[in-house]
Image (cartoon, rainbow, N blue to C red; front, side):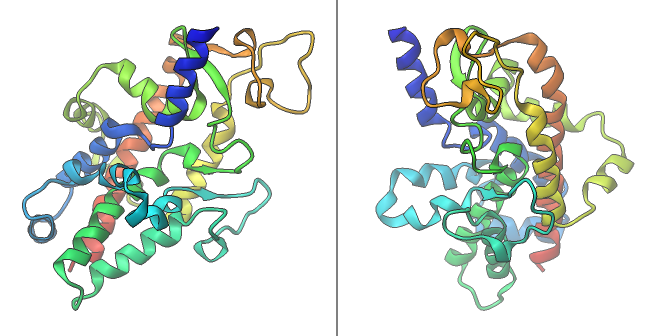
Length: 278
């Protein structure tokens, strides 16, 4: 039990990230492949030669400096109520998260011809990251379980939570570098697939994530004390035997979903940059 609690606490700390470093780098790497030449030159100038993949994790790294960046911590998610069918950035507040609003505001900085290179760099680094967050389904949740952070499961025999599993667990289990995974998620895509991915608005893309979320929760472990109104494994105190035990069947079912979201995140990031860096 002590091992389970120690490792679980470690995973809860890590789960503040979205996609994890590999996932975010994949989004940046895919996007770079679909930038037009003019946009690519502007990106290289703004980032002073750094790649989109390299800067994609910066927005998580600065969480270690709350004195200067705490105001950005709630930019990474948006809370969308189950019965809300008209969600928009105008509904976002400090408590719901400002994911949609933050992407829009940083795009405005990129479009501003009077903005300094430094301001554009800050904006671009966040856009790369936040578009990735938008495509991580559990960053568009109802808020009832903090995007799966409260939902304790085991994966391949080790305790974690549902959010951390989608952030890093399944991606790490695939044992691929970000360049390999970027190639894997794009290599079987047709021009029709790319065209389809480019369609829609940020609200549409967020809605896709929202619709995926309910499908991600595993079936409860039935015990004599299992309530019928909530997910037992999402309550405050969960015994190891109450945690759903996830392994190959879960990855077989959901890795295609995860890969598709990484692909769409990269294609759509490129679309936004091509449209706004003119």
